[in-house]
Length: 611
Ligand SMILES: Nc1ncnc2c1ncn2[C@@H]1O[C@H](COP(=O)(O)OP(=O)(O)OP(=O)(O)O)[C@@H](O)[C@H]1O
Ligand SMILES: [Mg+2]
View 1: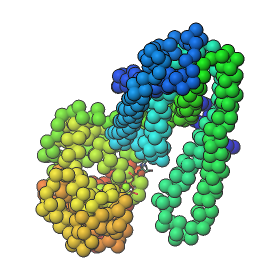
View 2: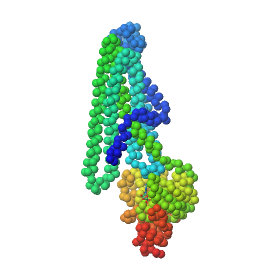
View 3: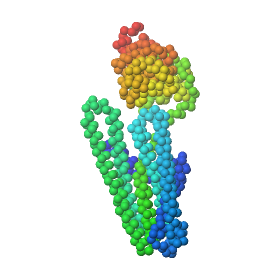
View 4: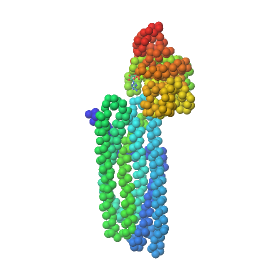
């Protein structure tokens, strides 16, 4: 049942082939460029005119080859062309005709080039703007929104759905060109012989309906193919992230089999789609044939001059391609509707945190940080994670924050970073509530490092200088030395220019943490938050943190989420958290036995002086 519902939900966005809403959405994308559509129409009509006139000029050429013809059976267009292109004796002004046709074809090519340039250029530009604006929304959205959203969906929207919308836009530009051609050629057909044109129209109607049916099916297959590609891509993304687990638990074969199933489904869908789309062209040609024959039969019957019939047929033949485009574009237009819906959802639902730049600029932490009765539940839940947290942190103190897992330590520092806002209570920076400060200028004075620190793909230098992009090499190196990272960095191939890999995967866990520490130190923060590793093996990193604390103590306020007895003992004060409350605020030597137990340092504190 649940699976069924899921499958239904996944299939739902593909079901409606609503072209009108797609059109409206696409037109909205074009709104910043009101000149674009008219320009495309003008270019499209100009190119079609050049071609149609070129074809029209064939009439005197062919006419001279065949026979003069009787003016009474000639259409106005034919007479006009003959008047210009034939001399008094009925001979062709060959050089004039040839040169004109050549120039017209050059002109048409140039206009089509301009059309392609404008169409593709603007499609690319609008797509880029859409992607950048989506990314901008994500990177500036409230953290609460971001942590609750499905990151796979965000990736899919920014990556695939924008691609689909781009395809639709590009189709739209092609459709406009095709429509111009059909309009111009159609007009020429009527001017050449309105009777034959009416025959085409009468025969064309049913064919058009048939073609629509066929291409609708092609659309459906196309959408199914897109979905199948999406499934395979999603599977790959998931598997790449779990590579180590797959290997150590020996699931390579099982995963390959599961992958093969997805790939096999893709193969089946691909085959159906390919067959239909490849057959569509030949089948269409087959059913266009009766129309051509009907026109010929009528021409013979009505005694229309052969040059006119030929020009008519050439024009009709050249109309096939734009008619096909017109229908093919429906695929992309239909697929675009769910894509644009997703894009709209992201743009509308991500709450922007940039409003928090309105406050007073923050010059740094001069005196003290006060936590005043903070209460907090994560948005979307009603479980209290912080309950009345109060504390005073004078500038330059080293505070150890300890407590069992899930006590709320990381949550408390998230509030200090301004990533989340307390439900009630205040954080005071030198007496000013945090929410009255410009959040960005406050963040300029804080930094963090520790076990959850994220590195980005790039060089070691890039990662250390991440928060201070214009730092000189000497400063980067000094920060690395202070974080005890310089020696291992120099041993890396390439030194500071060594790549750290995706999320720093080419480095050890401890090396990653020391790079993150160097990154934090380079920022020379007023408030430094350190999150100690829970595992006890990484002595080098612990030493690095210890020495950094020693160097900075007295000037920089340091909040250490401590798991080590040694760190705790070196702190000025210990805040012990349990179940969202601060249950003790004491000097390390004066901790109660209960607090020491909660801090996980029970054994070590037994021999503390003063206990
Ligand atoms: N983004 C979130 N949304 C909802 N609840 C969350 C979120 N992050 C954490 N929590 C919940 O908040 C509580 C406190 O988590 P927190 O990460 O602050 O604990 P912690 O003290 O840092 O633990 P640890 O020592 O294991 O890191 C936990 O019960 C956790 O389930
Ligand atoms: Mg934590």
